View (cartoon, rainbow, N blue to C red):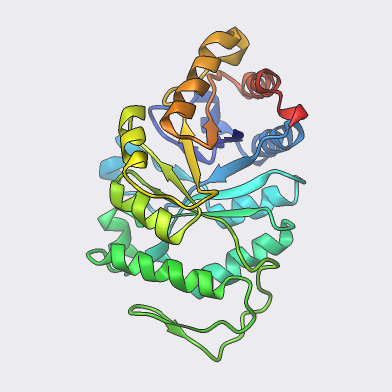
Length: 286
């Protein structure tokens, strides 16, 4: 099992945000990233929304740090921890723009990028950015194929129903010819898309029985990652029992990687909780 963190501060959901996160900034974020890196966590995350409709603020929150700027900044302050976009909305970007921008980040970080990608659901945001909404599913499928063809290639070529390019140079380009794609979503279609076109699935808002049933219904390639959260924050400083039970539940549900969330009331408390969890699962010995 691999353990990463769903980074606080950069995404602030009203149902999960701690009060200290409201005023936190770059200094606090760097302390989190450096601490998680030093402890041996697998990854940290940053999501994407350009502008969130005020009408959904109570449910989704409105604080979403820009993924490219944030992860680039943290790449310079860390050494091993992987950098996950969880998630970028494919329709908001041309595949070559993603290949250039995030390929550059992959180069700057020494090959530590994982691209978390999604289809998107906020109609107002699509309209704001001039992105087509109704065909976003098949468009995302084509974007995934185009991005795969372009990744790590100086002169990429691709022809699909939505995206076509050739005779163009992308320089610099990613140092690797393949980067892991993790698909977000909560439907069986998102899982089948991930199994066919990506390397992993990062579902949300599904209980563990639903997840297990969905995973059992889809054939997945070898090495396919299933990235699950605990469902509720754990409190490792309070003792190992509930934490080990939570790990057992996500393992039974099919997780290969866990996005760790912990109870926390301040930055120092959060850092202490990360350390307590790391000791419990022996991250240093992995």
